[in-house]
Image (cartoon, rainbow, N blue to C red; front, side, top):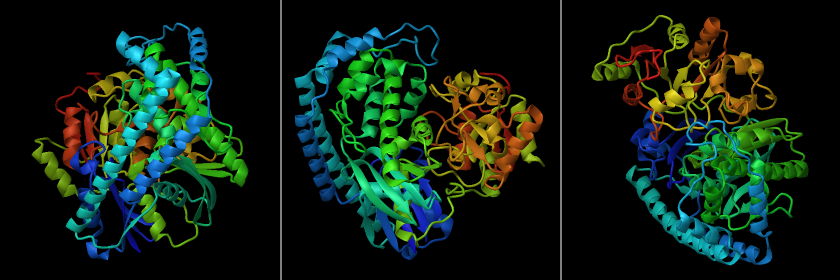
Amino acid sequence: MIVLGISPLDKDATASLVEDGRVLFAAGEERFTRVKQQSGFPERAIVAALEATGMDPTRVDRVVYPFLDARQESLLIERALQEESEFHASFQPPSLGPLISAARQRLRPRTDHVQGLRSPDQRMRKGLAKELFYSLAGANPWFSRLVSRTRARDWAKRAALEHAHWQRELESGLVRLGLRAPLERSEHHLSHAANAYLASGFDRALIVTLDGYGSGLAGSVGLGEGGHIERLHGFRFPYSLGSFYEMVTSSLGFRPDRHAGKIVGLAAYGDPQVLLDVLLSRCDRSRPGDLRMVQNLNVHFSRHLAAQFPMVDVAAAYQRALEVLSCELVDHWLRATGARHVVLSGGVTANVKMNQRIHEIEGVEGIFIYPNMGDGGCGTGLALHASWRGGTRESIHDVYWGPEFSEREMLDAIRRAGLACDRPQNLARHLAEKVHAGWVIARCSGRMEYGPRALGNRSILYHGREPKVNQWLNKRLGRTEFMPFAPVTLWEARHRCYHGLAGGEHAAEFMTLTFDCTDFMKQHCPAAVHVDGTARPQLVRREVNPEYHQILVEHERLSGSPSLINTSFNMHEEPIVCSPMDALRAFLDGRIDGLALGPFFVANPRTKPGMEN
């Protein structure tokens, strides 16, 4: 059976073509339009999928979409908000005043510089009038409840209109492309559960999905066994850990749908204990295995905290609260089911530090996080589920599921850019020598990675012995980050570089969780080690990506280090590059020293390798 999976159209629209549980092609529309998190019908991605596979639209047996129709979704939203009103009427959290006063007493001055902040104790000060409003709208018992109810109703109205809009666009787009196969809709969290479990290779596993909103839920718990999925529990919206984290991301001055990773990095500089009990006091944890949260859609509460407390402490408290709450939920359901493996999906599971904490729960023998864990991966999940023939299979080998380009297309692009190129006899050794000598190298080769992580085929590489690279290379690329670049490490050297890998090695092939670094890693690749001593590695096997693996082998021969830093090949606020022309433009705009475009090597005539600027 051939199934076309289309992810939600509201952001990060993605198309996946799956045959009998095997992914043939998957890519996000943003890679073709060059608009970050492109919304709308993914026409270019679908056309690319059909062209790459030689598939005629009439051969598609089914089209699947991970939301119910607009009327059903609206009913689920209304029901969820009604249940929230009943919860607020019955649950009385502790008074915030004494808790916040006690939090102020725990503040300690700090002097260590935090890259990206004006001072280590920087706050989000907004002026007296705004801060007074935040205090009333976020912390006053009566007024904050009124504001929270109003915001929830406004959100519900917008969501209902958007569901209707995207439904019309989906149906018209399918007609336009001649895709007349039956369209099947599903509740949202089945798509997350399916991609996490069916791609994991585990026969029996606890399935946990966590995101912002999906078909009345903010998450789910299921049990996967023998290729079948059973739903055990749903976390009701708006008690959403996704919304919880979006609120603080917005309140600290970042885009909540795009920059949550910055909060993870910022959190390591703060003290979570300053505000942790304030946050946990707003959660009803009386029912094990479930979660309910007071006024979770009221952004004014987190804005109130951000104005009164250092950004690093606010970030640290939200990150720690996320870890505490998620681990409590997972631990409960592991005990209830007796499962020893856990699989994760949903936007919240992009939080690599939370994933590390879940991996460290006593009794967890294996963990897998779906590589495209956000809504961009939902179409693939449903397509896998619809075409699955039963039983379990080995885990996915890689996610190089996007388009690839011929040598002729690459050469033509180089010539159109007016650049010269070489074709080194041993490209891996040539690249390793350049990186060791201080060159920043970009690589665009083979099929494009699917999902949010650059996994070598659309990556920028540099040696990891220079910690300051996080400042000057991010500046070149127009980025502001609080986390260091992630490392890529030889599979064979993994235990020399990281602690606590057992059960998480395969997940680390997709850069989906952090690990504590060894002294060897801290010495040989300090640029990839965060202030908390962790890193988010990609482990590379020779059989998965031979050329990429060989670059690391050659680099280790030269330097003694089996790791390089690996960051996505794109400019700030742009999608990862797709085509040779995309690669050449980003190569020149980012003042990258060298570009490996397939078998060809291009030296940048505008840079001086080894120089920071």
